[in-house]
Length: 348
Image (cartoon, rainbow, N blue to C red; front, side, top):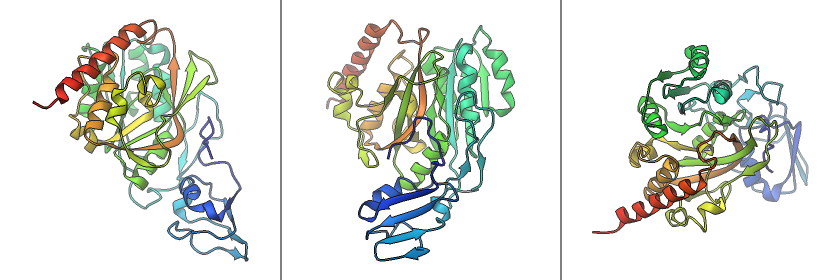
């Protein structure tokens, strides 16, 4: 099953019917996503042990029916009724803890911005309206001269940290933001992109259940102010399995990176432990490829990554973004990063 583009969580099912022979992997993908009233029908025999479903309410030779699922299978919040942007209301949480019973981990999201007033409010609202119960949202503005300051004042009380001052570019701003962060899970969201509903909740549950160093989800691409995405991106990593982030493949720019085998930056989250093992910074000498260079360092640290099917972010393509019209410069910097990394990695 693939998540819908709108990423409706809880999934809008009254009942789920599955083949018992394939129940384990399929059901694990639904854990923490189902509405309170969902019924489960399992046809045939299968290995359901370890799924914590409890006893079925009705069982025959070929059918098991679960009228009510255990708490760990229920979605932790009720999503607002509207699907289309702009969102107006926030989801209402009905679980004080993760499905496992552990507390919601603090997620720190950093947004670096400069003169992106046209899109910044959408970005901010997409984070705050997650209504995630343990959010640290940090916005670093490089001294914008448009209406950015007005927008930031509007949300000042809801931001964990916000500063507007001249900086040395996006990487410098990101480092300022991450230095202020205290969360267990980290990410950055560009000020022209936006998270989809339920992104932070899904990320928290996936980190809690599988304990990877990194998680990559899906990314929907939109053009400008378009209402509908024109493409969907997913890494080529296997879905639902924890694997090592491959340094060799990352270094294969033409055969792997440019084949979209890896990431659009905002679809990736990682742990503080991995961030610290990898140097606790993004490279301030880079204009385009700071994310690629960070992934190289994380792969060098044997980062264990989980790929989930959920679309997590809307990535906006527009004529004001850095890479617009500058692909040759981007390519040159990317290859310089690769060569520099290889030189540093050579044994003395």
